Amino acid sequence: MIWLTVSQTPNIKVLYDSVCRQLGLMPMSFAQLEEYRTRLYNEFLRRRVFLVLDDVWNKGVLEQLDLAKGLGSVTLVTTRNQPVLEKAGVIDEDEVQVGVLSKEDSWKLFCVHAFPWGFSNIPFQLQGVAELGADECKGLPLALKVIGGSMVGKTTRQEWEFQLNCLCESRELPDQQEEEALFGRLKLSYDNLDNDNPVSKECFLGFAAFPEDRMVEMEELIKLWKAQGLLDDPTKKLGDDPTLSAYYLVGLLIGRSLIEVVPIGYHSYACKKFYVMRDLALHMIEGQKPITCLYRPGKKLVEFPGDWIRTYERQPCEVHKLSLMENDLTALNAVTFSAPKLEKLYGQAFAVDICKLTALTKLHISRETCKIVELCDQLSKLVKLNSFHIYNFDKLGSLLDAMQSMVHLEEFSICFCERIKILPSFITLFSKLKVLKLVGMSSLESLPTLNTLEMLSTLSIGCCKSIKKLPNSFTSSNAFPSLKELDCFSSGLVEFSEVEDGAMPKLEILNLNRTNIKSLPDTLIYLKNLKGWCVKLESLPKKVGKFTQLIHLDLSFCHHLKELPNSIGHLQSLQWLNVSYCYDIKYLPSTMGDLRSLQYLNLVGPSTNGLW
Image 1 (cartoon, rainbow, N blue to C red):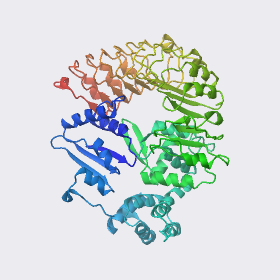
Image 2 (image 1 turned 180 degrees about the horizontal axis):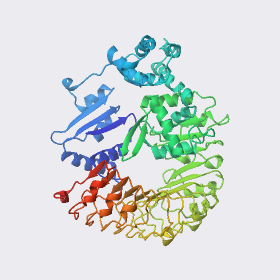
Image 3 (image 1 turned 90 degrees about the horizontal axis):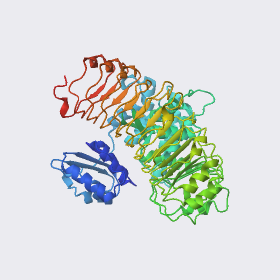
Image 4 (image 1 turned 180 degrees about the vertical axis):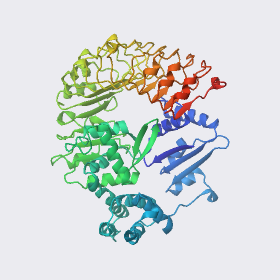
């Protein structure tokens, strides 16, 4: 089954990528849409697929997404617009009208979210008032879920009656629009976040910066909330670990049914918000005085919003955050927009004159959104910038030179700047740098000596095809004391030098997928996640049994790997092992039976016959 949530303003490329992942294929990162569609169409012809196109608003997208035409395949479309069904050729007997829930089902759904301790354990004194609360939701599943979630933790009849009165006051009035009435009801759950943790309100509103139905990975969310200072808790109620704090806050939002979390991989999760809840967040933001956020993501805008310019031509702009993610803005250079207090800028940056954004801390730029010459003159003004991301430029010479003043940088990435052959050595002077990502730099031939970056925790050289070897300084004693993740996915690496004792002592995640490495070092004993999908890999370290903290080991498609060492049985923490399509492995060691924590084992492939 393939499930796609389409939404009002779908990003077809993102949806195609999702199809690929659900089919077990690699996304076509650089393909044109028509080429991408043809490939998927042909792939579907060879498969029997149940394709779900959920929440389709526009009949025009069906031509791009209705691809399951193979023998025995079926497509299910959910929509609230009759023309969509007509475009899909749905006949009357295949159409199912979904109404509101019955009184009985409404009550059950409401209780599931309002009473986590169980449907059969509802206190007698709350039974009547809870039934009235469920009735106020008028059989609408989302309202039942959200409003039910807002009642979690309320144990007295007085609390329930107060909330019921608030709900009744939000009933639709003669001059009140339907959308306003719905927001009035759903706002109850948002208001109750004050009882959990006031920070959780800001976390909920932050989702409005992303396009509708956008999956936000936990890693991205943690960085966002950390940059906004939401995880800085002087009371220490959230603890010292920002990751645990973020998961705690996500848990609060889930408990109130304001967002949902979906798995996207092994131990990887993403958050999403129903479009109605995202609109509720936008509604709450637009009602703030003064307005501190301007969000217009995923609207396919081709011009900078004129109402923003007109509004702030004659009055001070108090905006701290601005999002224009996933739009089609092109003619931007003539637009000026002064926002002296702006700290976060998401999406297409040069719809504004950034030299006036002196409070800016995070900046993303791409070739489509700015000109290098204009930018270089402005970067020196951004003295508070700590996160800078560059995407898809041919030449960066003067821009990189202009970066020398960015002494506060904590995150820096250059992605798909394919003609860049060398990086400036002054990057090693960014003493506060924690994240460095060099992705898709196909002409980059070598890396500077980076082991002076003692705070660096994440380094990526994914898809850097010209890098054949890491500098010796990477593996020398005491190098990279804080590094936790090294991502070399699909790079040109052909060898990984032996790591000296004391080098990379905190490395937990090593991704060598799609490299040409033949052997692995045996001293990275603190690894928890090793992705070694290396076609030319011939052997694992004999001392692999010392990797006692290893949880995830991916050796799929290692065609030349001949055996698993007996010491693999010492990996008592190992939960996930993939040795699929390892053609030369003829048997598994008997010590495999000692892997007491193993939950997932993949032996798919023609060589698995007789492994046991």
